Every structure is written in structure tokens, then in C-alpha cells.
Image: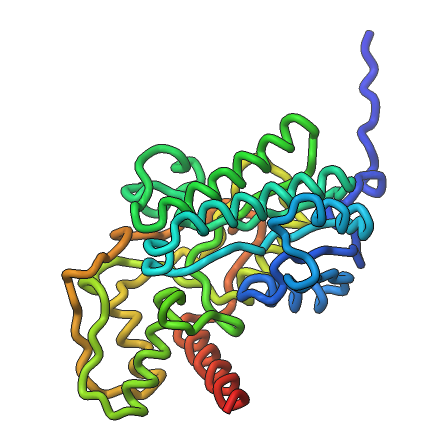
Length: 327
């Protein structure tokens, strides 16, 4: 005869992230990290940060000492060397090695310090150039990568494997998430290193200011991209820390995309640029399409709240405030 024993009560199940948790956000001054800090603070958590001049996360020894001294309840690994096609093509060594060093230092240091929860943030560029659309998490490592950002993508893939390995070997409650193209306050508007959306905002703003009759953009304008406001990304990060504990990375996006040509048209409207937009098809387009399958994230209860045009207008207004303050 067998007897069914009662399972643990709901009260005895330890939450994945307790209220008022102490959370170290690595990369807190960046686009993603600053948004995560805002969201965690609003949710009542204690956020821990360190500036780069105080702690270089590429330094394994110093990072390990810091995490052992602070002993946070959780870590959000948002620190990374990032950039657009030009930056990735020009500095592949730095995009590979800096990101590998950061990931190895923070994840290994967190484990040694007994950190219970960790969220590693990668990028949608981890998926093959010709991945099925929308891209499911299962598409990882099923084909060749986009050559223009291969080094960065390989570093982020290594991070996913690192997280999965810590889970399987040590039972660590560490998870990874792959955001789509992000934008918002805190973005990089340097034309040499920025991503497409902030670069277009600056190009069209300056063309209107200078009275330029035409603006020439890279590529054909036909590639399709998905964009998510960084405040929506931060909300998704908190949701995952609270509700997800699986081996597989989780896609973070809005589930909709548009062509770069359509994006340029919206930004022209927002910046009030009324000149001609020309396309230099001799320049690379990058991946033809990159739309994420976000069904797993949606099943956890996530819904983005900021529409693209509204988000672009907010980002433009933020950048104008920053540039005015620097004059």
C-alpha cells in the first residue's frame, strides 16, 4: 500500500526573487542597465552599482572580491561592449574578448559568492543569419551567423552556454534572455558606434538643422527589424527574475517588425526632416530579417506598453535635453 504525501505548501516554496532583494546591476550606466535600475528601484528592490573606474568587470580577481564582499541576492548582467555594424566590423577583437571577459568574471564571481539569482542579457544577433521568422529560441546554433557581428554574437552564445552549464553542474538558478533591438533614454548617439535607430535620429535632426536637401543612408532599406523600448525591456527583466527558471534563453521583444525604410520615414516625421532620403545599396544591409518569437515571454504574462512612434518621440526629446544641457 502506498500513501500519497502532501507536497510543500505554497508558503514554503521559496520565491525566485524575494521582495526588497539586493540586486547588483552590472553595466548600470548603459542603455539597458540604467532602465533596469529604474524598474528595480520602482519595484522596491535595493540596487547596487559600481562605476567602471571603481570596478573593471573584465578583471576576474577584483570582480570576485567585490561580489564576495557585497553578496547581493541577485545579479543582472547588462554590462557589455555593444555597437552597430560599423563598430562590430572595425573592432571584432574587442567585441569578442571584452564581452567574454566580462561574462566569465561576473558569472563565476557570482557563483563563488553564493549569489542565488542571475540574469544574463545577450542579444538577438546570436541567431543564424537565415533563421526562421519569427525566430524561436530553438534556432540557436542551427546555422551560420551574420558575418558583420559574428564576434559579438559568439561571445553572447558563450554566455548562454556558461549560464546553462552553471545550472546543470551546480544547480544554479541562473537564466539568460535575448533582447531584440533596443532604444530609449540612455542610448548612444555617436554616429561611429551607435545602432541604427539613434543614428537615424541624429542624422535627420542634423540634416534639418543644417538645411541639408538629402540624407544618404547605408544599404537598401529593405531589411526588417524589431524594436523594443528599453523601459519595456526592463519590465521583462524583472518579470523573468520573478517567474522564470529554465535552461533555455528567453526572447524579449514586441513581436512586430518593420523595414529600415519604414523606420526612416517615422523618424523623418518625428524630427520634422522634409528632405530626400537616398539609399547607398553598395553598403551592407546586415541580416535580412530579425523578428523574435516571443511566445514564451508572452506566456509568462509580458505585454509591451510603449508604441514605436511614441517611444521614438520620447527618445528624441530625451536626446535634445541632453545635448542642450551639454552646450
